[in-house]
Length: 287
Image (tube, rainbow, N blue to C red; front, side, top):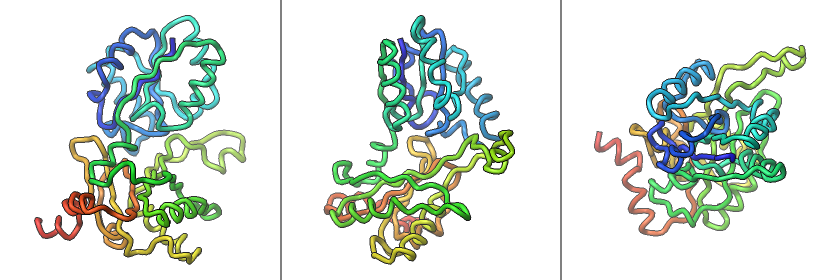
């Protein structure tokens, strides 16, 4: 049996009772560590620190040895995980909800093709936790991912999706890039992998890139005066939610990762009333 278990967003305590039961009866436990990360496991030291944190996690609650599954393991060695699941119970832990990333859908498809039974245990994810700001979930359009720009790669395919959402009056969730254990281009050219330091996109970087693309495209999909909501560490005790214009949010220090951003579409009066609690001007007045 392959159990794919959502961990929620904050820390090790967010696992459900059903998920914990599945972990404790599994012979092998993996935790996926590249589509997202538990807030308590993030630092500039990368996966070495993650391993230390997950060792603490297993001692504190789960009672199982946990293998950190990075991008290479999930994408290149998934068959090894599935092979173990043909003869024993294997738990594959995912931050958020199991189907928050297409990688995990692919894992289910491959498991079923091999005749491996799959059970999924759901949990909270960024896709529903963003409702905390008051914008109604059914008024969101297509979600977009914002990758880090480089000197030679500045993709803008997300622009049309945001533009379509805005024309329909819908809100847009922007998922911000996470780069953990990514091989450098230089090392790949030399044939010996060396990994870049981990990077987590901040709200300010996302807005800078969005405005750069708008300036290049010039189709007025959004402007620096467009209302947005910035989120940091959703689901954690110290989560931060701030609403304001793009220009205003550029000046906000959202602190440690993980961050995400919502570009606000047309709003209902009830949405406006709730969103007002998070407006930057109001927060500054209270301070």
